Image (cartoon, rainbow, N blue to C red):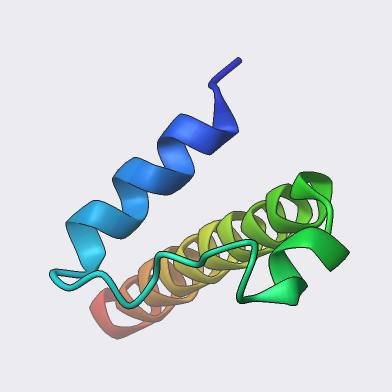
Length: 70
């Protein structure tokens, strides 16, 4: 749905104000060793874990608030 490479670049430009996140494929062999699907999978796991955590906090907070009011 979204071009992951463009999103990846935008994400890092917003979060990191310096150029330390930019890797040179000629100097940093890890960029060539790991396929872009790996980074997409890592991003998916992060987003899924973050979403489940927020949802869990919301549900537990709502449940505790209901028990305090009752």
